[in-house]
Image (cartoon, rainbow, N blue to C red; front, side, top):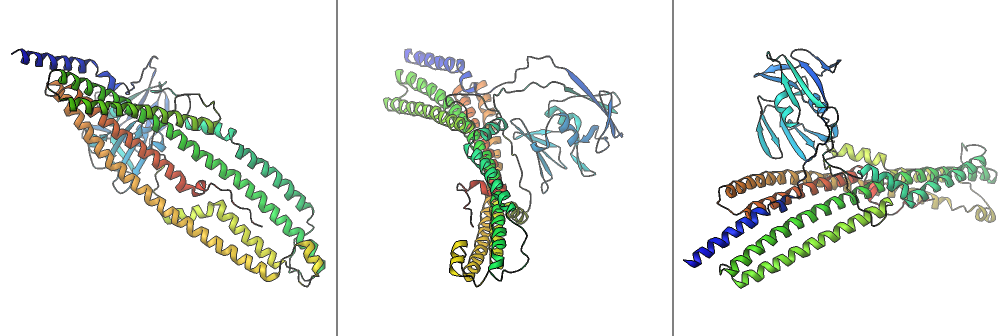
Length: 524
């Protein structure tokens, strides 16, 4: 009897301990704090009237509002604008006729001919089906307004609807730097960019000097020594002009590479912060499991082997947390070095992850445009023209001393140089096409993986609800709920990382030359 009483006391003490520490695993969830008074403005829309009233100013909608199944139907773009959601935060799937909206950390999906709205995997029933009218998605105002935190009121005849919006929105998160802030600092801090800008100035001086030495543009082949000085001067100017343009394009490439490097370092900080938070949650959970096993071991309900095993797992969780701290420090160090901040400075980054661009364009069209915009391809094409010009302006029958003094190669060698340049151009275009097709496949796979993990995220949310319910009715200890919370956070982290990877690959897909670490060799 005494043993049963001790068992009951042991279990009761564990429940009290775990219940009192529920806040540990939830500490990563930040709630918005609104310390300012809300100042509202009113926007009125009317049934069967394209005009709407925004605090006395009359404006026009894209499509006339109407009533369907007692629901006030308005174009979704109008609601998005009122909610402060930019076009960059909206993705449209033409095949599925589905719009995906990224609002902060929320993912909202709306499909035509459906009354189901999905927000972070949770399905919500709207008052009526979404419709397409005059090429615009029409949505029930009250349902979509509720999701976007808009206050909606209709008059008793349901012919007028008032939408109330905060004039001054308080930011949910505070941050010290955005990506754009840090990119601006990195551009100012880059020695490579400063060197490239000086090279632009240098090559401009050389080009202008060569231009002054050029009397006229040769219009025909050189046939004798008399034409040699003029031809040589024009060739020198042509090469100098090429060098100057190449320097300008090189500086632009450096800026684009810096933009990628800052994005990569920025994301590494966010990712390391996520890893550290998860490691901290895992350590807290393992600490509670260790306490549970220790209590059970003292009462004879857990073996010494189990106690040693949980101790090893706890030590491993501590190492993982310490590793997470070190990784975060390294990520900050790298970003600080890149943007010119003190190596020890720590700050908060704006944490707003969305798919920045959706690659809907046909891959073949994208390849053609990318090759056309590539400074590498431009340089190779220019080199071909320069070498062809050198062939066309070749002066024959020169004496040896003149050849040596002007450094003139044989005519046949110049022809071979021109053909070799054409081969290099063809090879470069092939490499561009190959890499771009591979990147296009990678982007498609990343989107598919993301969609699969959204399903896992939805399942994890359901598992958490079940765990909470079981804890509330006493079927499970609170630690089960905390395990479900940790699993949900792990999947959220995976979703965030997929967005980061996708955005970085997109930057390379749009400008593949940013991954070339070496400067283009300037060919004569």
